[in-house]
Image (cartoon, rainbow, N blue to C red; front, side):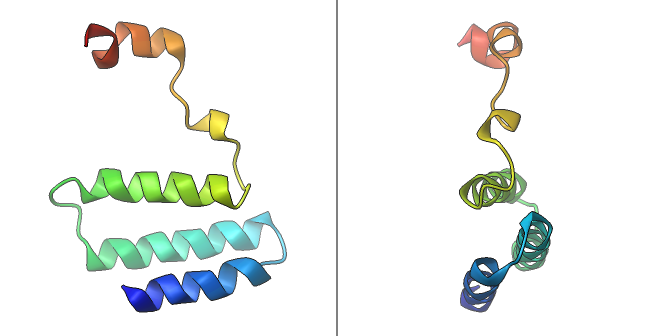
Length: 80
């Protein structure tokens, strides 16, 4: 695990553009998935890690990942 984090920390700062950053994040996520299979909610954790990396590197806007208020009010979270 330390190796894939170290590789990501080396590659991201030298990425020339958003496409290279997305590729680096994708490779990190694939490595992460191979170490931690999708049992026991690791898929959800991996999706959140991917979202946070994309937002941190300013590759995607945070609004892409935010649920709409209308959907949240009628879905599961609206019933809580």
